[in-house]
Image 1 (tube, rainbow, N blue to C red):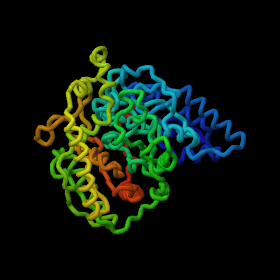
Image 2: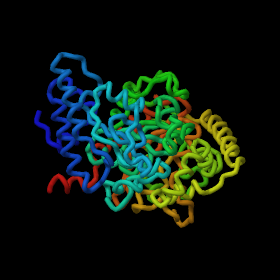
Image 3: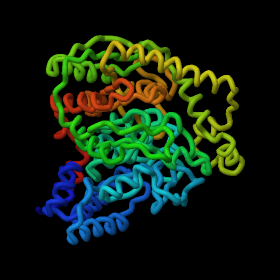
Image 4: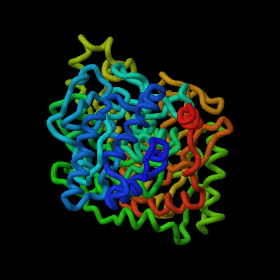
Length: 486
């Protein structure tokens, strides 16, 4: 089997692992194709802030040596993967988009990274993020701005920006993202990918937001999830089958009682009662997003036999309270200590957040608001099996902004475009973004599928069923055709 970077980019993670195990491909062949793909696309996309081709070659050689010695190979043997630069890697710089940590190499791998390595995955490098993940886009003070493969003048979304761009460009079949307010789902929607945030605690997270020694790194604890970004539901499930499961180092982890691969293969749904909300009753939504998502959700009724009900979840906009929770999770004293010397080198929106003084009642009100939101969600999901919505209020927008200030004729907060995502970090429910279709300008739009707390299997089944009814695998950015033809 001859492998070029073009033929490599068409393979799924599952297909690569099977080809390596069956000796139709070597891990080294796969890795060299991935590196060639990275070298082709990086000048245009800047997905990788810290490429690691030599480390990848060394890992691939170890996989091939283990196979030659007759050793059992892991489920991800030889599969290239990108690791978001907010996720700790002990042998690679983890800069988190900040000048403070420009040369920081953690002492430990994140648990998810440990598990990917043990499964035989080949880390191709670290993928770019906004500073400490405090926004939903892909620029920071340290590295080149990450660009969207669908239109390089536009953002890929964030904060898992580089992970989204790399997977959409075929550099890796999947990548690790983290999601404290939508950061797996946001770039998945903007890049035409599948992104899954499992229930809070399914995937353990350590050291990351639980290492108190490192201000900025130690943020988002009560909101953060780690999850896969991929080009298919089956590859997302494959990664989850490796990285999910409890670990004593993360006090929030829960038992892993999900048969991830089986759930993704089961494209048949029972007759579910599904709620669909275009705007949650308060969000300004771009008309093209409404059009694409309205058309997409009809599949659940016409092709999958479900009952579709127009229904808003019933809470008020929790945006201010969400940011109160972020602040309560942050080491404000530690981060503010940087300001006298480093403010000019930090992202302006982060400096503004740190310089503001936040009253104690803002933080306690945020916690009360989360309790209220969780209670409303529990009642709502007592009536419906799933909730469908747009993933984001807008299609991809221009680089170097935090978000549109006007949507569908309404003046909005620059963070309002994230309004469909972060409520489910507050509740900890499972949520996926799957490709819904393209705007008239050829830009991807995501459909969000939200399940009851701990009902991850149904979210996966629904995503797989939708994917089977609305195949997306042949749709890809035109940039890739141009680069391959050059």
